[in-house]
Image 1 (cartoon, rainbow, N blue to C red):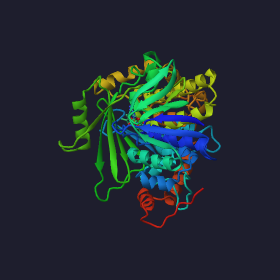
Image 2 (cartoon, rainbow, N blue to C red):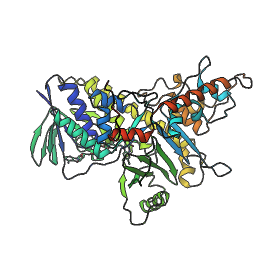
Image 3 (spheres, rainbow, N blue to C red):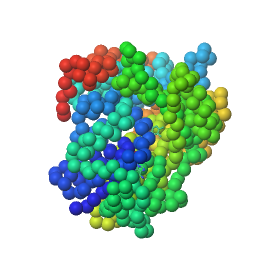
Image 4 (cartoon, rainbow, N blue to C red):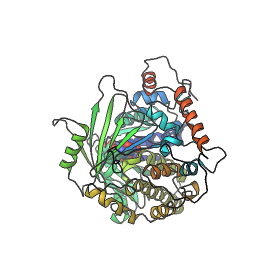
Length: 507
Ligand SMILES: Cc1cc2nc3c(=O)[nH]c(=O)nc-3n(C[C@H](O)[C@H](O)[C@H](O)COP(=O)(O)OP(=O)(O)OC[C@H]3O[C@@H](n4cnc5c(N)ncnc54)[C@H](O)[C@@H]3O)c2cc1C
């Protein structure tokens, strides 16, 4: 029987273990899946916001939605609310826009975005075309009373407790036959680019494949490659540190059904509401402020007293050029990292584990399979990086050195530069991004950022006053209907916690 050994018990290790086990062993054991995790090294313990594709992972491995939400203190996420990413308005209002996960269609018109651009723009773009935005404003979920598991009227994802998610997946994996070994790996024995075995505090382990889920340490893959295998995003993504803190909910607090991203002096702060607490983090650039200044700024932003302890994290921003080398595949932080502005980390783990299954044939993988895996992962990383850069370079903030400099990152993103040039004179549409590999963020997402950040094209299409009134009246009506039909976020959380008699219907 072939053996796959995963090293690392963070989210990437356990997501990979569950997925590989499901792929290979669902009809009886054909592959031994083993996971080794160190009792001495903690997991990074962040990674609490997700994108809708997380539901594909949960469904693919047969996890029940309500059970998962209950055990990970999860809440619903309908999108991200961005605040302070542009300069305040003349009357001092904080700039605000949302990247929701849905977009409505315009019947019998070119498309809803062009219609909005040509219209009188009575309301901002996100408010005009998205039902999820309307739900978020009222703190509603996209689920109606009898929504089946994973079903909803518009796409959604979750906020979850990273530590509890790891434990939940660990229990799930072990119950299904994954072997868990609590041991510290002390050396990696390899010849050329092939890892032969690992020496650990509980003995030596041989394996056909080794999956490196050791986080930023990259313990395994760094043994079979060298420094030339690193592609840094240093010039295009300035943020390389985070300072984090968890805050408990006060009695009566109602968890928000969206992530908040508030731009600060040298980066931005996330706010992620779980059922029982809020996760907060300030992602900043160490080139512009030091850790003490960041911590103080963040403490003031959150209005927290001096005695509260913060956690500091260094982030290695970039990706490996080859994430699969010989018989070693890096997954999670060991393969690369893009700052968490659009919550892409967990999705990249799912992609890598899934692509490994699709490319692996256990009989001495052909180099073309390995090359294709590497190419796909690298292109995905690069596209996501460009999408993150977009959020910064459209800002008109000039109040700190960071914000004055950040537009320079565009010089290192030629694809994005070309697209932005194009979108000066035409609407951003599917065909402009259809050569994308990842498809994680399509034209729909790009438009929310472009128009939310006031980057509008000059269109030369004739129009008459009031031509588009009916579309936006119709969409307003649909939003009203949706808001009347769905469950509130607090009702839904009560149901997850068994405080009411709601039963989710299994698909
Ligand atoms: C600041 C920040 C915010 C983030 N926010 C998000 C987000 O909102 N959404 C999202 O999707 N992603 C986010 N991410 C990314 C996400 O946190 C990671 O993708 C995810 O946690 C996976 O981490 P990991 O499992 O690769 O590494 P880790 O959690 O670091 O786990 C490493 C594991 O390797 C083990 N290990 C290390 N050395 C050894 C050894 N010698 N022997 C045995 N075991 C060893 C450790 O014990 C540990 O179990 C964020 C990341 C950061 C840094």
